[in-house]
Image (cartoon, rainbow, N blue to C red; front, side, top):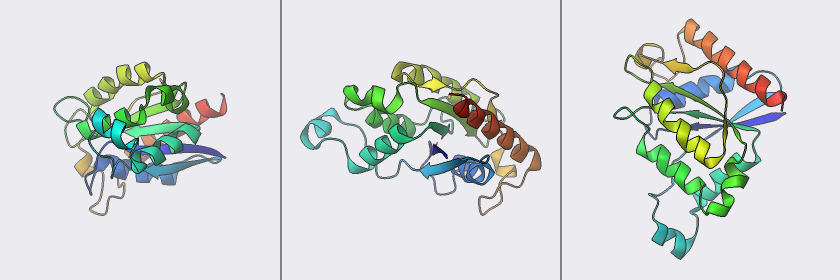
Length: 184
């Protein structure tokens, strides 16, 4: 059984990106499971704090989960035409200490998807993540891009995915990513 970590780049309770990951968990192909994780509890990175107390428990647990997983699906919102600070902060903690980067990210297959209330589906945030993932040595999956624009119209109030077209795009995205993992 393949294990893929699903990580939302948002802390918002009614996050479209977290909702997209919940829908993805229900649509994973046979032979794979999506383990949803969170950035909640990870403090703002400060090298002085790292030196004094080490890696915070929430960051250490997420690092270990990512390192042990077969892949990572990162669902990112877009803030001011780029990646959200909380998500970058979380990834920065996961790259500490530098000697752990290879264990956590080295060759790790990563798929990036996004949802946004705007008309472009957070495509600029996806693009902003590419040099970060490359620097960390992750292997960003180059399958079809999944961007959900006008996300407020495709999710119900309870966060469930209501749009059949988006559901089918998500199903194909997941099938492609999982197939790439099975071929490794």
